[in-house]
Image (cartoon, rainbow, N blue to C red):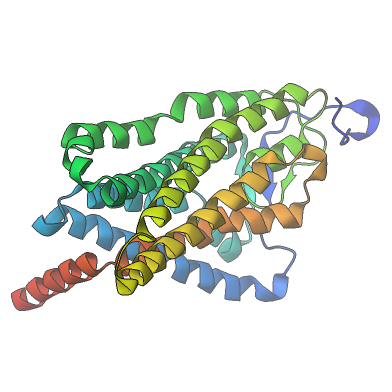
Length: 317
């Protein structure tokens, strides 16, 4: 299968840098977007940083659920820091060039942390499944050793495959254009590649199946069991509260996994720059903005711990 984008004259370009177009197609909104992205980045760091802090300091939050939440929040801070500061820099300076090495580093880091996020969402859903559906077994199943193993597995499982994926993509020859619509990711780079890329596309589908689809199915399985158990609760108030929590979690999960699956399961020929830009914004910026609110700051125990922490800080002043 040949890529449709062949350079004029048949010459391949050995690119030294790429150009991240970003939001250059809306020049009248540059400074509005600049301010909006800074506010969103600050909110993500503040919200997730607060969760990391209180889940480590508050003794009432030393449980598996909050251990996973703390790690997940730290992951979100790392994840958005790969792409958002670069977007802000490009908007503020209008310097859009990114070196070949920096682009490869950005893509590899995004893929590794994206895979970790997929696994964390699955682990957190499994933790809630055991807590709600098998409460008597919860202390045994989710013991400290298992929790540490799950967290380490989430952080490192994607590293070998995503380094290999990145090496494979950046070993391709690229056509005359060096313009990337949003940030360094597999779909836009494959769109610029020349020659036979069928194997690369199959590897993308395989990776998406392992790192996106499988965790997503585990999440759906866990929540289906949770909802089934909740329906058996005698109290209508308890049912409503549980459904409210589950629906919030599922909304974020569907947003993240849905946009990622559409991005990575489409064929190279069906990609469009504008659609890819919107989809990538969902799983790199929008969901990390909502996650601290949905997963933690709406949680009663987290709010109590936050009040205690703030009161201690004010009494020290």
